Image 1 (cartoon, rainbow, N blue to C red):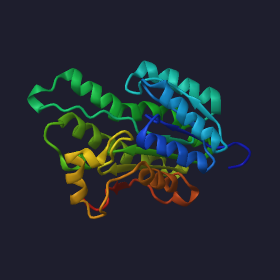
Image 2 (cartoon, rainbow, N blue to C red):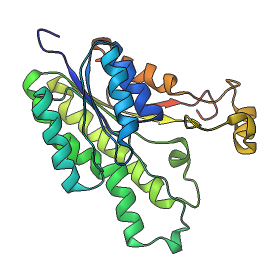
Image 3 (spheres, rainbow, N blue to C red):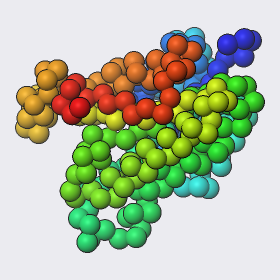
Length: 247
């Protein structure tokens, strides 16, 4: 890494999978920009966890689905660390809506958070990656989005768009030492979910060949590999992490 630590930006990193990724990358020696749109206390907890692992953290609050917020988020990240070497577009929204009931505002909101945020942030951070000759971009899809789940058309559309963006970035920037991949998680309960008391989660657990549901550590382990120097030949891939329930 030379004298300057590499830095990672993780959207939606105050809880759940984003928090797991922040701790994984901090343990690997990355400074971390922690981002959330609402709960600053959660982000402060993660920043403290990152610092406890021996690297630096800064909190950049804001909604990555709001282009005006993105400018402030990017300014904080770049003023603190100079450049961002790893971009993890984890923040997402998944509202339910039948197709004929979906409004243009519904569609715009979901597309902005789930796809356009990745475009805006990639534009902001790619120049630094190009200059250093090294970078990692990780986007997120979803098992239901891949299958085309009814009742969430805008989510499926946005996640497929993110997959297209990933493939385009991998082709254009791979020769510059920058990889772009997308992760499709299976069923991952939130930190506060009590799986034992949820009929839905119990049903999904029984269907999973792994005999369990996913944890933040499962995602974080894959992110750790993709963001390492050893992960440099993994590019343009959709990585399914679901215990084998969907192949």
